[in-house]
Image 1: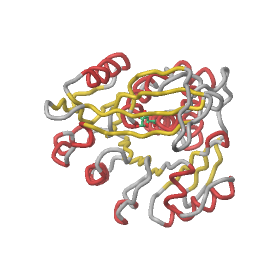
Image 2 (image 1 turned 135 degrees about the horizontal axis):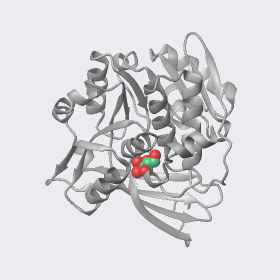
Image 3 (image 1 turned 45 degrees about the vertical axis):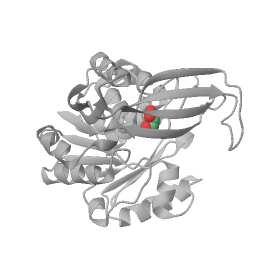
Image 4 (image 1 turned 90 degrees about the horizontal axis):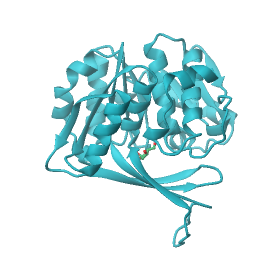
Length: 304
Ligand code: RIB
C-alpha cells in the first residue's frame, strides 16, 4: 500500500502582517519564516507523516533550497529516489503573504527546477506510479507532464486524485481518468464559472463538475468543511474539532489531499476518508508553515 505524488518543491518565503497588502501598498510586517513548500512536496510530507509509504516525483536544483527539500524528506520519511537533482536548474521559491488575524494567504509561486520536469522524467518513474494504490498530483508542474502522469496511472488502474491547484484548463479526455477531483471554492469557480459562497453553490458546482466526467468530486470549503458528491451519494464533511487556534491556513489544502490519499489507500470508506482529511488539514492550520505544519499520525488519530 503506497502513494505516489507528482508535484513541485519550492522554498516558501512567508510574511505575516496585520493584513495582506493591496496593489501598490506597502505594510510593515510582523514576522517572516522560510521553509519547505510546493503543493506536491507538502502533500508528500503530509502523507508520509500520516503513515503511508510515500514516493515523491519531482525535480530540484543542486542548491541550498534543494538541500532544504532533502532534509524534510529525510526527516519525514518521504522516498525521493524519483526526485531528480538538476545541475542546470535552480530550485524555485514562493512568496506568501499571510494575514496574521485570520491566517488567510495570497501566493506567487515560481516552480524553478520542477518547471523543467518532462514526460521522459515521468516515464522513468513509471514503476513507482504503477505499484502505488493511489496517485496524487496538482497543477503546479507543467500541465503536459501532469496529464501524462494521470494517463500512466490510469493505464495501470491506479486510483487518481487531481487537486486542481492552481486552477487551469484541463483536456476533456483527462477528466474521465480522474477518480477524485478536489478543488477549493476558488478553483471550483474556475471550472463551473459561478462563485462558490454557500453550501448550495458547492452542490450546484459539484453536479456540473461530475458532468465533466470525473468520478468523485470533493470541494473544500474552508471553515464550512468539504462537500463530496458522486453519481450515487453525497456528504458534507464538517471541519475537525481543533484543540488550538488557527494561525496559518497555508498548506491546509495540501494536508487535506494527503489525508484523503492516505485514508483511501488504507481502504477507509469515503466518509471516514473525508473526516481523516479534514482532521489532517485542521491540525496543519494550527501551526506555522506548510510542510513543517503537517501532523503526525498520532495527532490525527487523537482528534478523530
Ligand atoms: O499550498 C501551499 C503551497 O502553495 C505553498 O507551500 C507554496 O509553495 C505554493 O506552492
